[in-house]
Image 1 (cartoon, protein in one colour):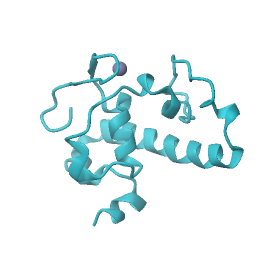
Image 2: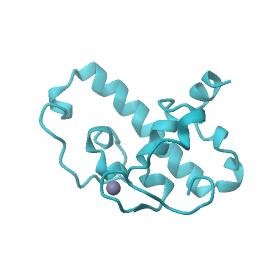
Image 3: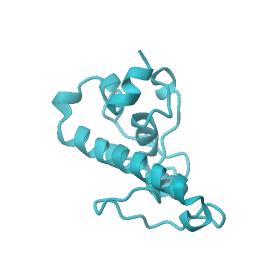
Image 4: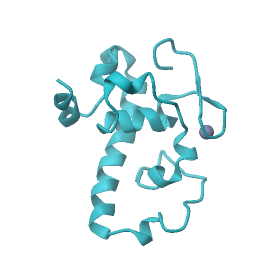
Length: 122
Ligand SMILES: [Zn+2]
C-alpha cells in the first residue's frame, strides 16, 4: 500500500495492513487528521487495532472485533460528540472503500481526503 503497494506493518499487532479499508492511518488522513506531509512518516495501524476510533464506523461493511477500553466507549462519551464523530469517521471509512474500488480516479494520494479537508491542505 501507500507509495509502493507493498504492505506496511501495524504498529500494534505487527501484522501487515493489507488493504486501504483496514488502515487506521489512511482513515485519519481522509478525515483531515493527518497532514499529507507527515503521512509517510506516520506508522500504520489496523482499524481493528484502534477500537477507540473504529467504534465510530457505522457501516455494515465494517465489523469490529475488538473491545473498546472502559472510559472510551460510545456510551461513556458526550452524545453530541458521538453523533458528529460517527458521521465523520463513517464517511472516512466509506471514502477508503471508494478509493479502493476506484484506484484510477485516485491516483494521487492528495486526492484521498474528503472534499472539505482537501481544501485545508492547499
Ligand atoms: Zn494491527
